[in-house]
Image 1 (cartoon, rainbow, N blue to C red):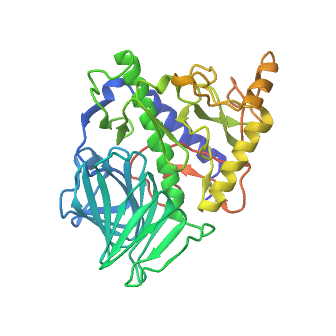
Image 2: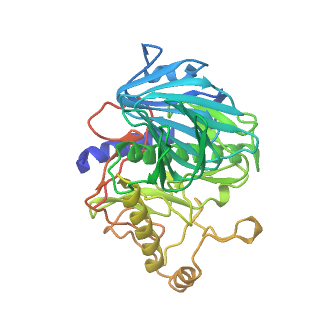
Length: 411
């Protein structure tokens, strides 16, 4: 799964072109629930093969069935609710609804990332006689093979099987049988769908950031005529649907941020820059690929983690590097992201003091070069982490059917 630097440079160059084409007029058409936003490899709906050119008009209606072979798919069940379907899987849409989204996992595996929980709404999954209702924002994993399971990586869910009902919390898993046996999740287990979902979450946040920034620039301090309300909009250059949130901040469990137009100017961001030391490093400048980040629980920039445990370790490593180097999160303007409405701050006080004391000396990326304009925090990869991001998905020899995505390699 490791690509050469030459190939990564080509991918990044292609992405630069895509980002440069992301003009305001590209964001049109509000989506319905059940929009298929991304496909990779072999995907079909009701037995008809899906191509990337179909995505703009492809919505799963009630009783539609989505199949993957050697491929994956992402479906927007509602704004801020991402269904990601793994290889060799089948999903049936039961209810494509903004207030009562319900699917059935018939075979294979799927994950749901719930970034915005709206009071009064419901997201639920049927799986071999069980019904799981998601109760909080978080990350949920389902399997439907010989021993069907539901796992909660973050969040809370009510699991119903016959007359039995249990509440499932973080890092717990339930076996979907009459016993509803509960156990701890194996967070060290290598998980291709988890790694792919992490990359997709990062890509979705980057596309949303571009849209929110354009809306802010076009509408003053909020929405413009092109995107008058929060919701799902088509992004033509990226060939993908994007979530435009309300004027607030919402965070993926992976650490990526989604900001509405009214707050996007304050968003802490990181970018991908190429360092001569042999890796793609996070920097705080106008880098080619800009992604908002959760300052308290940042995503693992420029790396793909293959298990939740590895992701957590690398996230901590990023935080340690921020503390050690005095790095601060910045907005696109280059200013520290420390003056948010309500007096909130996104920077570590000790780190901020060190950064202020050394502000006279310009920083350089810790890779021996790269994009200038700010400090850099580059976490070293481990043997359990893959290191290639391509086309919005984890590169594993499959053809990429749509989307852009950042290219990265850590040393």
